[in-house]
Amino acid sequence: HRDLHLSIRRQRQMCIRDSRNRLHWFIARHYLRAGRGRGFLSLITWIALGGVIVGVTALVVVIGVMSGMQEDLQAKILESTPHIIVLESGTTLRLHEWEEVVDLVMEVDGVVGAAPFVLSQVSVARTGTDGLYPQSANLYGISIDTGQVAPTEMERQIVEGSYNLTPPESGLPPLLMGVGLADRMQLFEGDTLLVVSFENLKMDILGGLNPTMRQFEVTGVFTTGMYDYDMQNVYTTLGAAQELVGITNPGVVGGIGVRTRQPELADEVRGKIQESLGFPFYAESWMTTNRALFSALRLEKIAMGLILGLIVLVAAFNIVSTLVMVVADRTREIGILKAMGMTRRGIMRVFVLQGAWIGVAGTMVGTACGLISAFLIGHFEIIRIPPDVYFVDHLPVSLNWLDVLGIVVASVTIAFVATIYPAWKASRLEPVDAIRHE
Image (cartoon, rainbow, N blue to C red; front, side):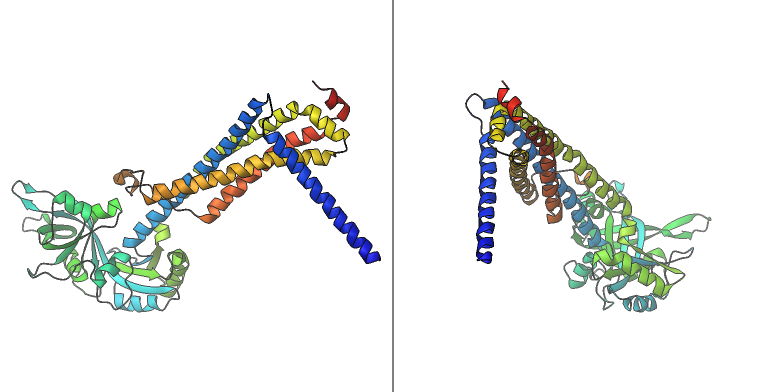
């Protein structure tokens, strides 16, 4: 009998609590709707709701664009840049006995590929009827027969034959050019051009210094989507680059490019490589060489998030003003409810539910609008931008669900906090004074 009595009592309390919750939500919905002669209250409710929608939409789109820009730049940089480069200290800026260094690097946990390279700044020119038209370029000499995993995506495509770097029938060294540089110089596959290196200077009989010049044949054109790379990078074989810059020993190269299991592990693996090789070798990760660029992007993402977050904060003030005006307009009704037995906590809950509905509904609609807008901007490349300024030719969008979740939580929290003061003010009204209010 005692257990049955406790069960009935517990069910009764649950029914009473459920009835109170339904009552509080019914009154809150009633206050959200404008009654006769209260059209202005309905208007300011919609203004508060619209403010939350606009703020959340703007936050989702802008944060998606900033994340997309960062990820797109990272992907394009890593397409032509090794995760880690290993260099040797010295005045010649050359790495000796590269085969032994590659063997040591491959033993490091986290490394999946390593290959030598030669990098030199050169001038490329074609001979025309009006003379030479030189353009500066970064010449990469790469090895395509090391048997290791290629350190970059570009080298992988060259090794697999997507881009042609095999010696042509003319006997000249092959050369791959970026599409931007090839278009500017009006070069096509099979054309011959002159490559000038200032690293291999030779003295003539009069004591003057002359750069080394060699003819190359264009065997293909590549595109990375990165404006700077397509305008400056050219590729040739390791042997041709060594001969151009004056390296006579096949065991000497400019450095070693290393590919890790994941790009995010580059810093960790770099430390292990440094510990394994020791002096005079040193390793640098792509995170270190591009630290300034990505730090600026992260700072800009945070700044834009804070600035656009002010829109949501303004919407929160709209919620406060809406609830304050509802309290002022419904003062007599609040007094009647309190006289009929509704507690201060119940009155407070009514107005918290009203403001929370505005915040939650506005956040959900704003999130949906933001996701749709971000998808359209990214998928259809609606907004075009100059690639020579921003590295990419359109606004990329990448939606990180943690960022979206953070925006949703922050918006709902701000809306909830905005309801506390008006709800507390309403709960403090005395029934007699409220009923007499005109």
